[in-house]
Image (cartoon, rainbow over all chains, first blue to last red; front, side):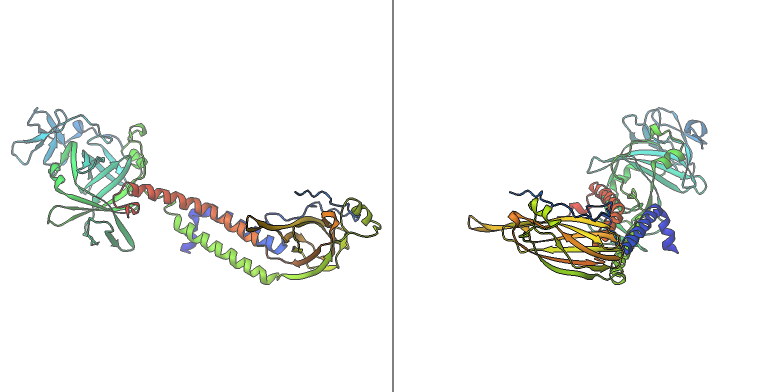
Length: 60
Length: 443
C-alpha cells in the first residue's frame, strides 16, 4: 500500500510505462515488431502476376 | 504578516556609549551585546552597568530581513533580532546569519544564507556521536537511518553586524564549526578547545518561503547561485519510487519476453536449399526475368503459418568474392496476399601487404511481422554476377522472438529515470564542489 502511495509522485511516468508495457505485450502476441519489419510491400498487394527481375544491383 | 520596524516597536532602548543614540532592542531578558545602527559601534550593556564599547564595524551593509521584522517559517513565528556578515577565517566565503527569536517560546534560532541558499538552524537538543575524527575526511554521523557526511569545517569571523545578541560574537572566531549533511538536513557541531561540543540542527528553506514568510519583495532576495550545502537534489522525494518502479518494470519486461517464448514457441517451418543458376531455356514468366539479367525464378515448398506470427528468414550462401541479391516474395496461397523483401549477400576476401582481409557476409536475416494464419510459399528472384550458379540455403521460422521490442521498451522506460539520475548526479557534483571533503577531492 505504501509502495502504491509512493507511486503517486511519479504517476505520469507510471501511466506512460504501463501503456508502453501494454503495447509491448500486444505486439508480442500479435507478432508485430515495434521498429517495423523488412516488408517492402506494406500495402499487401494481392496480385498474383509474376514479377519482373530485380536486375538493379550495382557493385564495384 | 507585516514588517515591524525595530525603531518604533522595540520595547526597550539602550544608549550607545559612542554616539548616545538610543539603540532599540527586543529581548530584554537575554540581549547583552548591541550594535548601534547610527555609528555601528559594538558594545556590551549588561544589567544596570554602563555600556562598554567593544569596537566598531566598518561599512554600511544592508540586511535582507529588516531588524525587528516578524515572519512565519514552517508555521512558527520568529522575530529578527540581529544579523551578521561572516566569513571563514581561512577562506573568502561570506554568508549572512540572521538571529531569530521564537515569538512564543523565546528559543533562539538562526537563518543562514549563502549565495542565495537559506537554512533554518536551531538547537539540536542532544549530542551526536561522530564516527572517525570529527573534522577529518570520512567523518560521519549515523542518526537512526540517516547518515550525515562531513561537509565543511571552519572558524567564523564576523565582518559586520547589526542588532542585539546574547553572546560576544567575536568570540566565535575561537570556535571550530563542523557541518555534517544529509540533505535537506544538516548537523552543526560547535566546539571550542576542550570544552564540550554544542550541536545544532539545520533545515533547508527555499528562498520563496523566506520571502513569503517575512514579506520580502522578490527583487530584494539575493540571487541563488550554485547548489546549496543541503539543497535537496531534483526529484528528492520521488527518486526512490522512480528507481524501484523502473527496475520492477524492467524486470517485468524481461519476464514477459521470456514468457512469450513459451506462449508462442519458435518453430522452423521451412528449410530448403536452392541453386541460383540461369535457366538454359527460358520459359513462361521466367523468360522476362532472364532477359533482365536475372537467374532462374525459384519457388519454395509450401508451408503452414499459425498466425498472427513474426517470421524470421535466414539466407546463406557460399560466396567467394561474389555477390548475390535475393528478392523474396511470401505469397498466401489462399488470398494471394504478398509480402516482399530483398536481401543482398556479398563476401570478399584477400591478402594485401601480407595481411588478410575480408568484408561482407555470407548470410543475411530478414523479418516479416504480423503474418496471418495460412498456407504460404516463397518465390525467389535471385540475381548474381553473370548469372552465376550459387548455392542458397533458406530457413524460415515462425514466432521468432522479437527481442528488439523488449530492447525498445527497456530504452523507453529508461529515458526518464536516466535524465533524473543525471540531474541528481550533476546536482551532487556541484554540491560537493563547494566542500573540501567531497568525493572528487579524494586522491
